[in-house]
Image 1 (cartoon, rainbow, N blue to C red):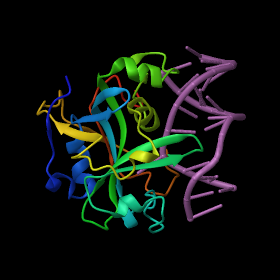
Image 2 (spheres, rainbow, N blue to C red):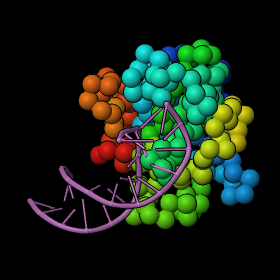
Image 3 (cartoon, rainbow, N blue to C red):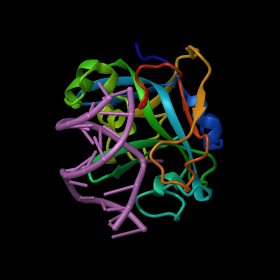
Image 4 (cartoon, helix red, strand yellow):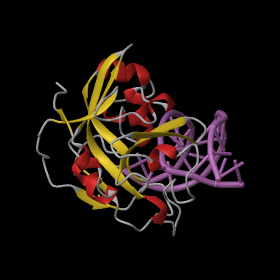
Length: 199
DNA sequence: GGTGTGATCGTA
DNA sequence: ACGATCACACCA
């Protein structure tokens, strides 16, 4: 089901606002040695723009937590928040630019049974990956996957050249404080997809 | 469908 | 103290 080719480094080595819409429709896979393969098709993303973006973890400079953001593109930046959730980003741009794309939602395509076990609270399948922390939990990703090379695994992004059903729709980012970049149109999603974090 | 609130702890 | 969130209660 989840097949495709890794994306070239040049795909990731661009501004996150260019990479973000291009990530829609791509396959995010986690080949867990213990649980097997789980995979989703990416349907919702947000761009975070390094030191210039007050909403970005990179805004206040490099720390041990966000170091992966400041590294080379094509890696996974996984962070812990609200004392209980993990969220995952794709590192973009040049080495040191700290540009990244938050993965906010996916359409499950493989390993549905394992996702349901990991996300016992999900009432229906469309809740499995509808949200950044839900997606990360369903895929079985956490702190140990911070820094993963997305062209190598165990977490990877694949392109199976499936066209989007409709062109991406842009909107404002979710969960930001007023005045800290909340007005920027840096969220993209596949319109009408049932797995979005907001309907 | 919508809104409001508590959980829970690493980070700065 | 606060957070790139979630689940649940409750109202419509």
